[in-house]
Image 1 (cartoon, helix red, strand yellow):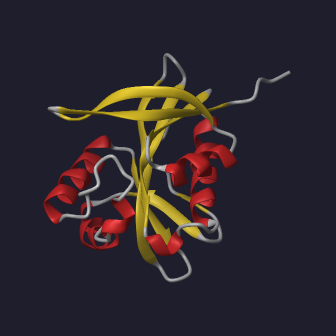
Image 2 (cartoon, rainbow, N blue to C red):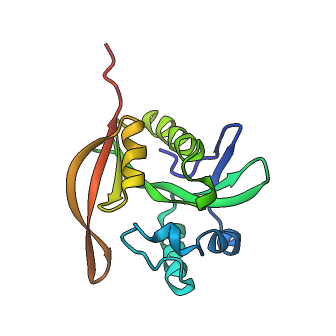
Length: 173
């Protein structure tokens, strides 16, 4: 599975994250309200965001989100933990500038990611913060199923609980 494809539609371009994206992505992430329901609510701070960016780069699956109409970086998303033996992948790292919340952008991003992934795997997972109702509702609208809570290590000494949502490839007759 190609974890860093270039995907696009009329609204957005998803392309592999590069080192040169740090400054515009850091600017997009600097709004504290983006992170208030996130398991790491201080991610807007430069020193915390720098660690997030490094992890995204190291994942080899991060995709920058570009608003095609104005050619501006508005967030990041990506694939990680691809497991060929279980035919699964996780979609995550996603954040968007608040200006793009509540409209079509998030669902269009997820549709591009889901369609790409389901051409390679049977199951897509999403790890969603327990208090992130916005993301939970968004995934439910796309047909994802909440499978329960899982404790996930997010730093060497920090584990947090996440809801695990999944979308499965329809069975072929």
